[in-house]
Amino acid sequence: MTGYNSQNDVASSNGNQAGATGHKSTEYIAQENHTRSDNRIVCSLTPDEFRAVRMMSEDMYPYEMIQEIADFLVKGSGIRPKIGIICGSGLGSLADLIQNPKVFEYSKIPNFPVSTVEGHAGKLVVGCLEGVNVMAMQGRFHYYEGYPLAKCSMPVRVMKLCGVEYLFATNAAGGINPKYAVGDIMLMHDHVNMLGFAGNSPLQGPNDPRFGPRFPALVNSYNKDLINKAIDISKAMGIESSVHVGVYSCLGGPTYETIAELRALRMMGVDAVGMSTVHEVITARHCDMKVFAFSLITNKCATEYSEKKDEEANHDEVMAVAKNKQKACCEMVSRLVAEIQKSL
Ligand SMILES: O=P(O)(O)O[C@H]1O[C@H](CO)[C@@H](O)[C@H]1O
Ligand code: HPA
Image 1 (cartoon, protein in one colour):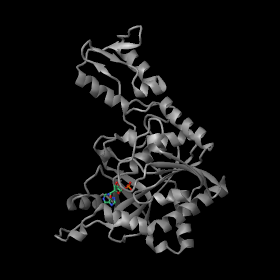
Image 2 (cartoon, protein in one colour):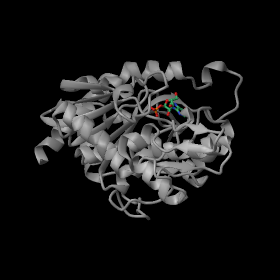
Image 3 (cartoon, rainbow, N blue to C red):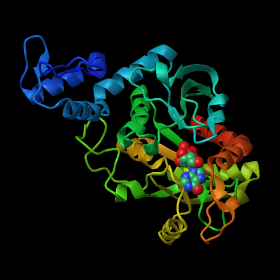
Image 4 (cartoon, rainbow, N blue to C red):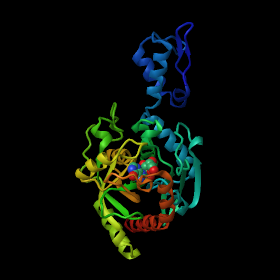
């Protein structure tokens, strides 16, 4: 964090992130135009205002910083992954499939956020799966953890600059569609972005065209070919009756939804609800990655009022169901990777 010297109103411009890339200090100096020869800036903000500005800019990840993280991972693993996997709550075992894994703890990756949620180990695993180089996040970042959406999905851009072409995003979700049972898998074919309705997007702020266009289209975000392959795989696995194709919606969390909210979501055509994934998909589509995503239905969402405690969603249940069903999820993912391998 850049220091602020309130005594003489001078702020150092070489804080942590600026030190890593040199990018932020340059940008800040250019904007301020109050540069001194010792690369310090005269700041006319109060200490609190200055801290607020610094915190805002520390949540921004310019291209160069993301490139630096990607270089760190590619150099450290000796691998350029083709597929990126994001493990949902309780689905970290997807990363255990990876052979010859090189494991990076988030806390040891420069400028990487840390995971704060149970069921999200906070490790990045790079290695080989079904003959394809992959990179898996054991632990994603959620908006409710206090990270802005751009920071939550920043790792998707890291994946892109590492060489990833396919994003597999998985999540635990509540089933709103009354036909869904606990333990079913829903292949996502579309989403309703509730955070987007509220004016929040991972692409907010200046657009860097090196990642993608200012106004990306999101129709056909979920790759049809991969959905069809996953349906075939579910038939081969004999689980097709518990695999659906549906619409996911992401709310901000960390509260689970009210009955009225769930009813509203159902009326909007939503089949499953969670607190993740959509911002990752938006970021992946912005930089032209192919996306495959699925939800493991860990609980049924009640749409009738009831006093019964066991009808309320809770994270322990989410984790327990994910643990029970991880084998099927792992098989689905490895078989799909094997299918992609055939086409490479
Ligand atoms: O979406 P993932 O990370 O799988 O986790 C889901 O499970 C948690 C709630 O139980 C929330 O974080 C929700 O988003
Ligand atoms: O019912 C839910 N709502 C929101 N997020 C979730 N993640 C797992 N289950 C749920």
